[in-house]
Length: 101
Image (cartoon, rainbow, N blue to C red):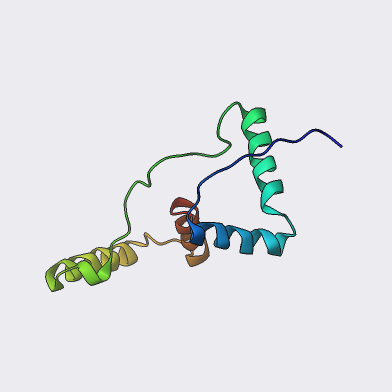
């Protein structure tokens, strides 16, 4: 067996629990996931995914005034009329990716 070393990190408890829940479904212990990530860092010579802010933050409907909400709805309707639409599964996939959901 290869020599190992300990790594101590501070995590938000909720984040750790969520990650462990996902990894458990995949059958991967958290320590193995960290090893996978670090091996990818070495292979890629950096972080193996884009680290950037999303182009736009999603609009929180509850924070909009009635006028602002009407404006957003009108923009959406205008896009629909123009045929500026995308399949919902692609939109939700991109949202999950961009906002790490």
